[in-house]
Image 1 (tube, rainbow, N blue to C red):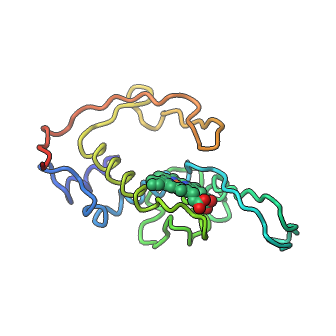
Image 2: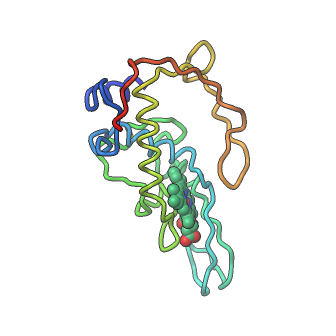
Image 3: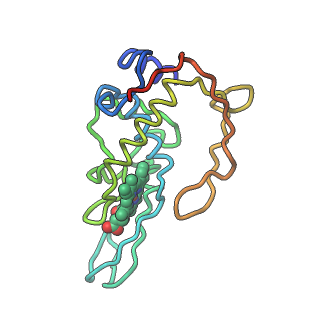
Length: 181
Ligand code: HEM
């Protein structure tokens, strides 16, 4: 968190709110978003219907079979990720690994012809909202404010819910920023 706050303070400062054009200059924020999507993809499973008989990874798949791609499991595959269960945004530093469907270990928006058409809007919203939350507030959560103890257990659903509500306390760290009108 400290590293993200420092990056935003350095790039954006404290007199205006983080905005879309800043995102390209905030590599650590982008890495946090990728790492969050890797461990907690919004859609843990994506579905396809095979159009013809085929063989994938040694498995014969007949035509008209519903195939589930386990995005959640791809993001935690130890054959692909070093120490996969650790939240370590630094793993993306200096890589061009992206979430746009070309890196098959990281598919939070799916891939191919039916991948999410709202990806640009989605990424814009996530980066600017998270950026503003980090810029404007200090966040207290977990036992005695220790973020490492936050309960990250996952529930069951088509989209991935938390098992238990996240309780956190925002503490303002900036004077109110006047918004442009
Ligand atoms: C962080 C935000 C978002 C995430 C993580 C997300 C994720 C996904 C995923 C995983 C799929 C399935 C892709 C596949 O089967 O390969 C999907 C499909 C889709 N998404 Fe998103 N999405 C997001 C935001 C949006 C937004 C903002 C819109 C519209 C404005 C949108 C519209 C759609 C539509 C219409 C489909 C169905 C595409 C099809 O079946 O051809 N999504 N999304």
